[in-house]
Amino acid sequence: MSYDDPHIISDGITILDALDALNKLSGEVMTLLAVDAEGRMTGTLTDGDIRRCLLQGSGLLDKVRSVMHRNFRYLHSGESNVAELRRCRQLGISLLPVLDDNGCIQRIIDLTRCRSVLPVSAILMAGGRGERLRPLTLTTPKPLLKIGSRPIIDYNVESLAAHGITDITVTTNYLAEMIHEHFSEPRYGVNVKCLRETAPLGTLGAVSLVERDDNGVTLVMNSDLLTTISYEDMYLKHIEDKADITVASVPYMVSVPYAILMTDGSHVNSIEEKPTYTYQANAGIYLINNRLLNTLKPGERIDTPELIERAIADGRRVSFFPISGLWMDIGSPSDFKQAQELMRHHHDLTH
Image 1 (cartoon, rainbow, N blue to C red):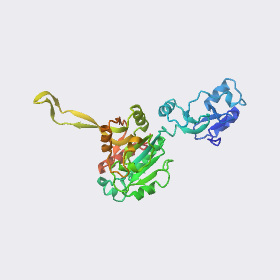
Image 2 (tube, rainbow, N blue to C red):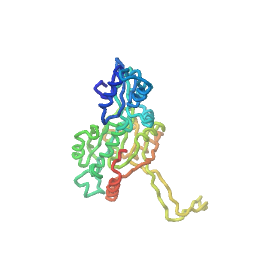
Image 3 (spheres, rainbow, N blue to C red):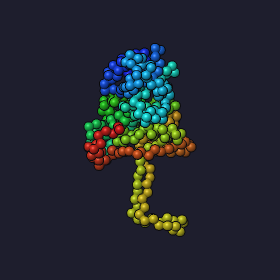
Image 4 (cartoon, rainbow, N blue to C red):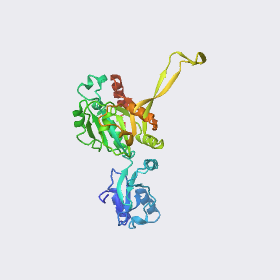
């Protein structure tokens, strides 16, 4: 990180010069990060800090180091601390520096633009034919069908980018060239990679074609969902549960229009009038430890439920994360119409 970043100043400049630096941050977060002669971060400064110090008798020619805020929050470079980043956001901190072992600024996280920085890769599955949506999908792959003004898949890419996920791969098959062309330029600041299946590999098989380290976590999801899921909440639960797989879920209620007998053998214990049962349904979004994904054979045809069943049989921990916000699977013409209606009233699915 160089002094070219307008938020970084020397702690040896005057308060007057700092005011000038703040004035040049028009449209940006109005916070300065001060560093010493060796480039180590020593404090932060806002216009509020300057206003308070002037009221307390400081002069415009006093040095920044005499009035800056020294008890600042930061993250260590090379470490992922999603919980600490969340605390900073909840405290109203706008700029969060990431420091190396010497205390020098490696990068700056703008929490007004980025909701989190999750240490995960993402794979969007976009190889399906979308047959239930014909004739719309005869010439356009379902992920590129527009909801409002944008393709379905773009809402997901933007949300992933807003969570600090920049390693995004889209797996393709049907009308793959159109999806590859769509992502030939960066989207939402991310260079999205595309990987074409050599043959239909099920809902998860294409993941085996993506190289990854054993350590780490990969987010795998269907590309044709509309959702406001908090990937940060899901990741923190995955880590807290020490899970090998975390499955995002949505409640699904089944109402029985009859009185149900609760039985024990031929004996009736009770009778329940027209009960409603709630189940957790698979939402098509998963966090999976890379070590488990790397057990897949390259080019193996496999659906996600099969991997989950394998994991359970092997004694691995499978957890679930209930989605509290919007979730829609655009599978049928009625789903597509409902999504279009929704978008007329809810224009931004990333917040």
